[in-house]
Structures are given as structure tokens and as C-alpha cells.
Length: 222
Image (tube, rainbow, N blue to C red; front, top):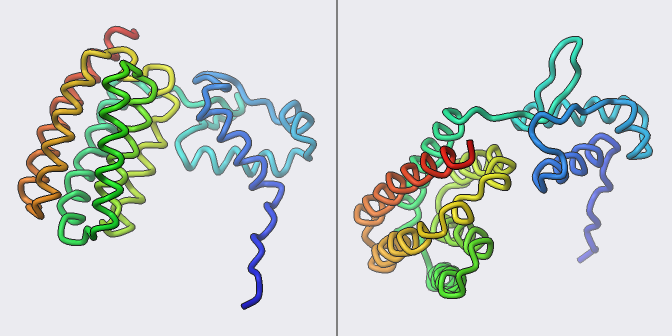
């Protein structure tokens, strides 16, 4: 079988990926102005691919383009943060319910590993590690769900990633970790038992308490 080599990135794709990485890593903070010519010079490109990249970032909700002002890294209002988290977690309830009958021994093993990673992070008092483990566990629980649902969930995670980096829930409220982990165990137990309704109900309780915690975290960060 011939080796399949990945297609090289276009200049626009390179600019998009590089600028997206800087936004997600909080190297470009919300409100930062993105000037075409300086960015093009820094990336060693002409203005056109950088302009294309900014349009793609606008479609992701990471950049705002305005006439006569150019581009800025999007600042997401508090109420929109809560709305998007709420929408994402409604989709995750659906994803978990859809995933339950499709889990296999291999996918359940990944769920158990992710749960154990989260337990270790909690026991170590490592809020940053718990944040990573939290997302990995959600992804493992939802992995067998239909791709369109998971894609919507991913998009909403990424839509708020720069906000979560500057106001990380578990770093702002480390006392929330034990409650989140208790809720995770309930979801995993229902998934393990093959009970889609119980898994969805446990995920719904997790959504409600997560939203309450985010309200408190955003108030503290204001």
C-alpha cells in the first residue's frame, strides 16, 4: 500500500493555525488588536493569507472584524459565556445518552482511565491537571455518539477556550473539584451499567451545578 503523505498547509491555513494557537494559548488576549501588516511581516507572509486567516478566525468566533477598526480578539460577555456553556452541556446530555448503547469494552476502558486520571489530579490538588482530565473524561464518555453532535460540542468548547484559560473554573474554585468528580462518577456508573436515561439524568445534574459554579467564578473574576 503506498504511503499517504499529508497535504502541505496553504499560507492561509498556516496563518490561521498559528494565530488560532496564540489566541487559545492566551498569548493574544481578548481585546487585542490584530494589525494586518505587522502580523504578515511577523509570519513571513503577504497580507492576503493573513486577511483570509482572520476571516476564518471570525467564523470560529475568536476574532471580531469591524469596518475602519480592523480585527480584534473577541471579548465574550459574561452572559454569553454562560449561554454557550449551557448550550454545550445540553448537547453533552444528548451525546452521553446516544453514546451509552454504542460503548465497547475498549471505549469503556478509555472512560475508566480518564476517570482515574481525574481522581489522581483531584487527590494531588492539581486544578490545572484536573481541568485537562475533565475535558478528556467528557470526550471519552461521548466518543461513540454521532459525529455531528460531538462536532457541535467541540466547537462550543473551543469557542470559550480563551475565556476558560483566563478564568479557569477549577483554578478559580478548587473546592468545586470534589463535587464535579462525584458527578462524574455518577455518569460513569450509569454508562457502565448501560443505562442511557440514568446517564443523561446524571449529566443534567452535572450541567446544573457546573453552571452555578461558573456564575460564581465569573463574578469573582469580574
